[in-house]
Length: 409
Image (cartoon, rainbow, N blue to C red; front, side, top):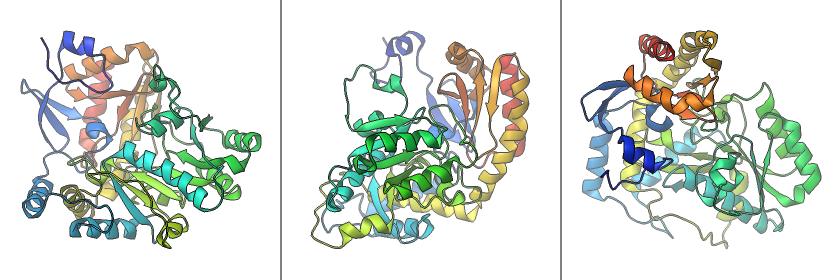
């Protein structure tokens, strides 16, 4: 009989049959399994361990905070000092100066918060009919109701019935598809457009040249809120030596959803950055925003985030992430010549995908990768995801590529 643990995104019958891959410790860009085998962590956990594993500095910061006060509600007028300090720090690096920070427990919470806030904003603006939220094909926006409904991965909606009626999906790479939807439905029905700067879990798809600025302008022209989903891309992964892809591409989002790299996954936490133009309506007084999370702005998590940001700044990990952009492309791009590979998508941010020609081989290939000392993950339809910690050296990227090539045979 297997474990009592029910894994997310898993065929539990297969897990029960074959057993779990049990990770017991990590250091830098390596992890170890329960048998003592060492692996290169090609995905930084699940896109999040930006500063690498085993950072005792973060653990100590959390322990120190828990010894003072672990958490207290941030509802009403309550707040923790460390949570206020983190909000101020995040506002200082926000793509839109003066942004307000609404803390959540993770990325899915952040997306649902942004969806609700967009609708409530238009209600307060005297336009209650603007309730539609729009996403893109292949996009992933977490697994809460709103995020699942507006994302562009149909398989994630199968078997649940209609989750949210006021959600629509447009083509992932054609700005005119968004414009056509607006012309068909009317801008007076659309509250917000959600956009990942790089599509992550849907397969690591880079935006066509000019796409991001074009859809941003369309939203601005038609009075639709632009929500940048930077749960994956934020805190340096696609920043080009900036904190956020929104800064790199000058998107000036009305809202920006974040999580993962905020604490490097050491403690669960998310945050929604809300631009002044949206926040000021709520800060003027008289509006009771009935939304929040018990653990939103958790003091222990805030301490982890502060320590994590300290490491990123002290070790110039934004610059290291920019280095990885070229290093991953240089070492992985040649794999496109292998007959089992359809293409390699890389060259923008510390992410890459090796697309298998036969997507059905993905599960088996992941196990082969482990046999060659690499812990990987499949994304989209048979794409091998590579999103290492920012501390991975160029030599280790070369080693990663060599091991992937050996696994391909």
